[in-house]
Length: 135
Image 1 (tube, one colour):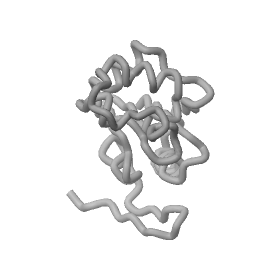
Image 2 (image 1 turned 60 degrees about the vertical axis):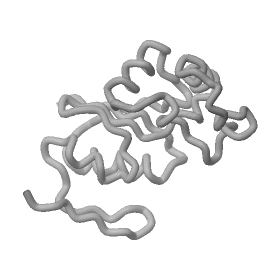
Image 3 (image 1 turned 90 degrees about the horizontal axis):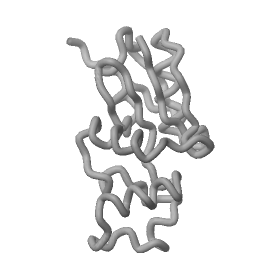
Image 4 (image 1 turned 90 degrees about the vertical axis):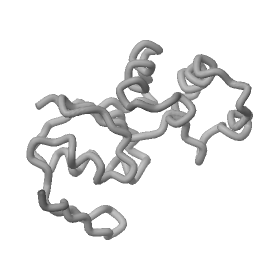
């Protein structure tokens, strides 16, 4: 299975998601999107695959969101994408891409449904235990 994660190593949710992917036996392609931002075409493709608007992908906390006035509804989708390309920290994370789909994995356990052999249980960095629902 091909797994790609748009990852920020400074983010606990992103680190937990990456750990769950690796513990499932996958060796994901890790894209540190702050160092290597997606192209406009790729970002548009990801937003479409997520089934959300660019505004829904914006991250507010720890970003220039407020300073840029991005809460104002005047900004078009194209303009919001421009801001995300100029300031990749505005892209919420982690985004995981597998043949089973594309998902913004917040919370991190949302990744489990995208994996062929997901872990049955996992303990996050903060000590929270996650158990996969039996199907």
